[in-house]
Length: 265
Image (cartoon, rainbow, N blue to C red; front, top):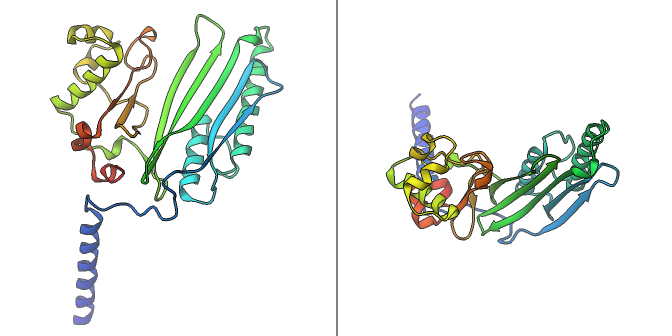
């Protein structure tokens, strides 16, 4: 029994040391064989039988055997609808699947007499930024099905190269003080090219958002210059005010990042 207790104590001590080491904010994540610059190949698939313009462009990882490429593949599939049941790194098969599905949907929609020349559904999924620890992707989705105007939606994701982990707002501390609120407000002022708080307040669909600017639905996009915040149409403001986006330098936002996020810098 005494031996068992000693062994247990040794295990606990070892785990404690491992825990301390794993929380060392200066430690870098081991990215293994993942290169500092992720090689990608730009693939493009367009419908030849459906109405209007239907196309998807993707910067697909060349090496499809890494955890990172699989994570990127899952993100791409989920962003396009999440119905692809094949390999998440069969990018050609995946893109053809989604283009065919869209063509079928729009063929049925426009069979009711609508002008199919009005149909446009184009998605671009490109590698946006990276360093030795992370790679960011950015999605632009252009959609027009007739009417007064179409829409352009943005989204993005940042991946840890070591294991493909998708980075979200959960790696930020959640601390929301006056300084953080002002960082967001100043970013919005810069985007809209305005100076006063009163003018900024008038842009919000919900005035309460002025007092506590919400984080974007789009995940944080890490770039060389800082974290990019991306809001879509109607998320904060009316259609006429566009899709606000701005980048906060790491020096301004690092105190609001958990160690997991800081290690990517």
